[in-house]
Structures are given as structure tokens and as C-alpha cells.
Length: 72
Image 1 (cartoon, one colour):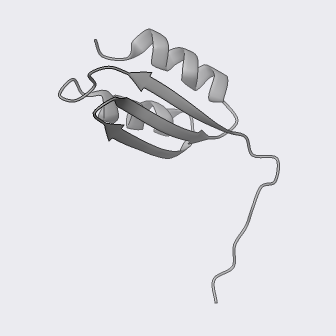
Image 2 (image 1 turned 120 degrees about the vertical axis):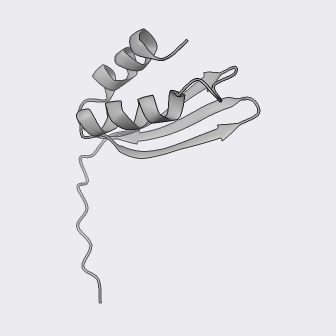
């Protein structure tokens, strides 16, 4: 049996980016930034853009750095 540990104070946010994000290195950028800030979650590409589900303590910093540093 697996033992699960939950942090009930953990914060999660959904972040949406519209537009073309394929072929510009966006997902690797998100992965590296999330790893740097100890953010957990997932990224989903669609024809409309990207959905990011992010969990962690530094979500505001993560979001602002996504806006400032994302590939063009």
C-alpha cells in the first residue's frame, strides 16, 4: 500500500497563455523555471494556447517570470 502525504496549505493556480507557443521552446522554458522555483504541476498545449497547472509556494514569482522571460 502506498502512503500519501498531502500539504493542505499548498496553493495551486491555473495559468493560460493564448497564441502560438509550439516551436519556440515554451514548454522547456516552463519546465526549467518550475524546477528552479520548486513548482509542481503540468503543462498542456492545444491549438488555442497553453494551460499550466502550477502548485507551490512561489506562484506569484513564477507567474511574473513567465510573463517577463518567456520566449517570444
